[in-house]
Image (tube, rainbow, N blue to C red; front, side):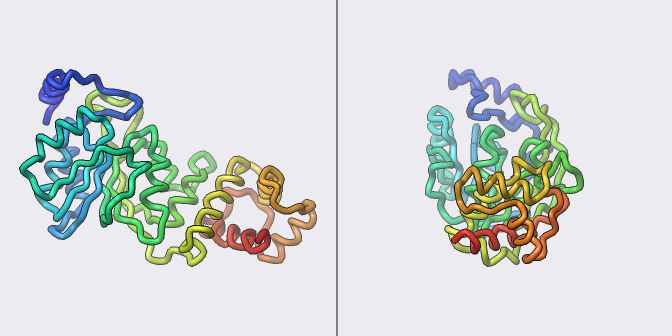
Length: 281
């Protein structure tokens, strides 16, 4: 589906792309082929697609996999897709906000994710004990934070959280001109794989939520030393009272130096959150 075909269909539907819903429609066949190639699809795959749009990717997926669950929040596009795929039995079109959905079991996610809600989508789909393989088109700056921890600028909360559950495997630049309308951001296609060694502390909902909350609480202070970041987190959340010296002594007792957060490895933060969960509870 090229640019002219896409514009023609949108006119027929009397639909103007909504920026608030991240409606950027794939119009480049080469990018479509690259996404399908990276997904390494099999006939027994069950694929989740988020934001099916006009169904260009959905159609290609349907030819190679057992089942496609394609979510589309826009009611007009949903009706268009229902008609388009009415005779294709392995495609299920769902008109629901993915963030509120009870998503069916799946082993791969292949999507051009709505850019404004990428973070919440990543948390819902991947932050669990059995996440799927992901082939996603996302904002380039976010992809850099998922893949790298080699400089202060790219190191963030999402870097730690995502790498606790997933292994970033491949990243390629994608031109915004592959979509209509062209988004005013740089894009990357990424492939991510589930970790086989997810830490036991993350395998229960309670402790997993504590980890995510703990990281969210300390990372606004990533330019500070660990003791200062944790003191701020404990104070704001009114959890336990520790003096700075007491906290430094505790960190030393669990073999953590009081250095800047960006100097730690990803998995250090899982261990750290486990120790403070035990201390607080």
